[in-house]
Amino acid sequence: MRLMPYPEILIKSDKPIMDSPVHHGDEPGTSSRIGRGDYGTGIVYLPIKANQSTVAYVPINCTSESYMFAYKDTSVVVDGLQIVLEVDHYLPIQQGSQIRSDEDVLIQIIHWPNIPAFQDYTISPR
Image (tube, rainbow, N blue to C red):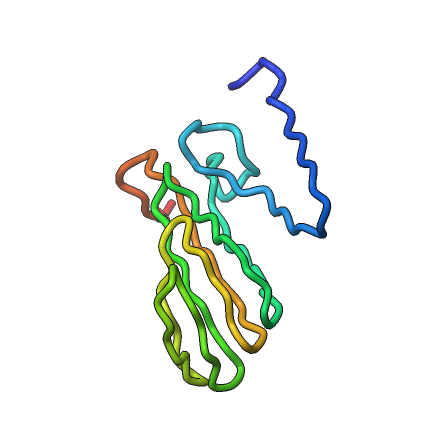
């Protein structure tokens, strides 16, 4: 149980930004209650507008996967590499990737903690 106050975050920007709180899962007991224990787990969706340069943040102190989706064939530039992302396909995204596309895209980030190392739901009969 963490008794100290959480650090505060201040963000200053001259342009509109999007912020989403994401729990890394590296401190047990610091996230919302799921099942029988406290776990930092979740799914985050990050919409990116056409011709908007974005850096995708992916949690690192946990197990995470992130994917980019497009609703139609889209030209995407990821870290300087131009790729055509076809409709009904996905593109894995890495931590800190610089992303720009000619159409709107959606990034999905799925994350769950590394603690405990073995995670499973077991229902024992009574």
